Structures are given as C-alpha cells and as structure tokens.
Length: 336
Image (cartoon, rainbow, N blue to C red):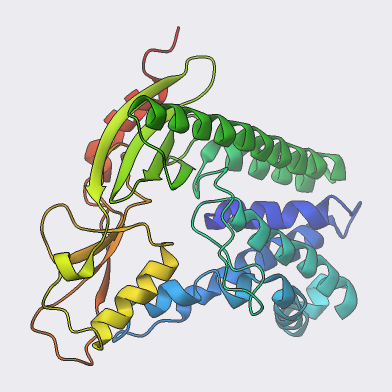
C-alpha cells in the first residue's frame, strides 16, 4: 500500500503495546520499519526495466526476512540515534520487528501480489480485499495513531488496529459479493469461466473490477455489491497468442523471455494492446474498471536485436479525465 498507510499501521502495532514515555519511540521505530520493505524499489536496471517487477514485493516482503529486515533498521536507528531513543538495541529491534511484520501482510491484502513465502515459493499472495490507496482505510488509522502519540494513550492505537481489521473484514465481504455478481454476469451470457477474479477499484471497496477468462477471451466488467448493487457492462479482449499477435518474434530472443517473465508476474492475464501497438498488457488493471486500458505493459520492438530487452511502461495519462466517470460508478444512483 502507499507509504502513509504502511507507516501508520507499522506504528500502530508497537504503539498499542506501550504506555508512557517510550510510546513515541515505539511509534517512530514502527513507522520507519513499516516503510522499510519498499526500499526494494531502489533495485532497478536501466537496461532491464522488468527487474523492478521481479524484485518489488519479493525478498524484503517475505515472512522469513522479517527478523533480518527489522534488525537492519534497528541497527541503523541504534547507531544513529541511540542517545535520543534512550532504549537498548533489543527493545528497538522488537518495535521494528512489530512494524516490519505489518508491511508484507498488509500488501498481501491488496491485488498486486506479495511473495510472502519467498524463497520457498514464487506464489504471489493477493487477497484482493483493499485498494493500494484507500483514504477511508488510511485516514482513520493515521488519525488514531497521532491521537495515541499526543494523548500518550495506547488505547487509541488499539482503535487504529481495530479499524484496520474491521475495514479489511468489510473488504473481504465485498470481495465475495463481487465474485458472486461476476459469476451471475457470466452465467447470463452463457459463459463458464475458467478463471474469475475481482479487484477493488482505486480508493474504495464499493466498486470492483471483475475479470473472467473463457476459452479464448478475457471479459472485463464492473460490479458494485451492497444495498444498491449494480453491474456495469464492460468489454472483452482476445487472450495473448504469440504466434498470432507477434509472428515476427523470435522464440529464443530476450524479448520472448521477457514476455514469459511478464506473464508470470501478471498470472497470464495478458493480451495484445487493443490499440494495435506492439505491447503486451496486464488485463487485470485499469483505472476505469470497465475498460481495457492497462496501467502497465511491456513494449516490444520488431527491429530489436536478440539480446535487447522489452521495455516496461506505465500509463496513467487519462486518470484525471476518467476520475468523474469513476466517481459516478461508485456513487451514482445512490439515495440521498
């Protein structure tokens, strides 16, 4: 999730266990440790832009790395601010461990995918119950953590954790309802999905993007579960077929290997870009849940040499223009 959320939840857990003077120290250690796993974004190679995808939410987010990662942060804090912290290394490490632990678990609640069991498994855990940015999740948590520090009362931090747990529980209920609505859409069309996923849209758990797979196509729709349930018919796209879509691509080339890497990351939810460009898109994500306008893709070059990498690209150029339509889908036709 976003840095503020990760830091706030990371601060809440150690803060909820402390009273009195060390509370601010516990919160600070937890906040910094809650941010630390995302330092993996510094791992990149200008010649291999896919390296970022492979390492983001990988070893730094793994459960087995928690003691190591938290020890690194604790060691840095102990070395740089020992006098100000006025605590021993073990206690600082404990606070950092609590904060660090929250990061990977919270990321797994989103839809991007987190390698919690690295190096024993390359499975990306994605529970799809909360958006990577959700103000209704973040702001109460951050506010309650701040209140806990200012009032020197750990009960506010426990309230922050309680709100986080409640919100994730609501997201779980909404997720199951969205899957049921998507199944109903498929049945109405006479389709039997081979795979079906539902993901919360940007900043909320009211509106969901659903993607289901049939023999040769992906079908993308939006659903809004709850008391004012509604479905929004989307679009569809042919599944990626390398021989049909890129007949010029040499099987042993670096670009062909990069497609395999991208397909592993995107769980084979891939298609050729609908605009006809030489891009392989990740169908799972789009700012508007009814459209196939991928937030990220890899671009191929027909003239590239056999050792040249495909280029990873992101596209959020239309997000601001599409925001009113997204709000209308989230809140439209609701009673006053």
